[in-house]
Length: 269
Image (cartoon, rainbow, N blue to C red; front, side):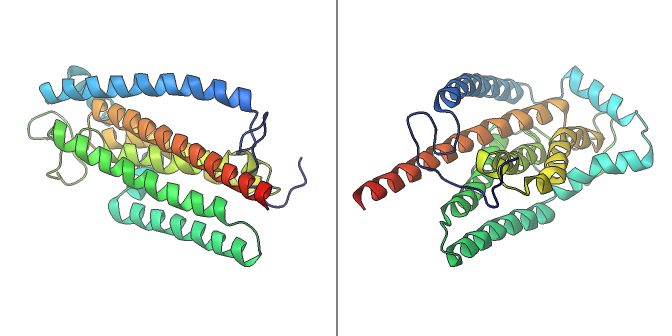
């Protein structure tokens, strides 16, 4: 195990390593693959959105999936566990969580500054965390209005609705999109090399496990509660992934830009 007490943060890039401390050739190869999949994801999402806009009623697989999920009759405790991420994702709890993380990152930046250490890593994380959440929310809202798919209605279809019927479009699932972006960005930060080299990085393991559980279970929860169709949930996962990887790319670009600026200052100084 590396004997490092604090994450290194932004590093001076070299011919073989990036500002994030990764092997440059491996990182470039991986980023090219990511870019191809991201472009394919965007194309699939656009085509799917046009299809749902043209046919806003639930597809056969939507009805079949909702009836199957709601007919499972899982144990009450297990059902509550699966619903928990959806409860955390309601507007007020999610807003409190986002603000809390943003303030925490700013406080850490202040602590680093007071210790005469560079606060840039924490400031960058706070800014991009807010931009990722806000940008994804804005995109989801625009697509939601453009597609304008009605919510699942128990008066029209043989399903149960366990929450109030809200007068907002249903495609894509906002809860699903939010969880992918919110937990996904925090997971990304927790797996960056500086954090992995932190002596106490294993403290993050429970949070990482819960984040993965929340991402995987939120789609099931939204269908179980009757709030969204399967195609809404799948679109939420895809849109969330598109937004997440876009802002991760911008985060990496900003990391490299800041590192280059630091390198110039060192050369000039």
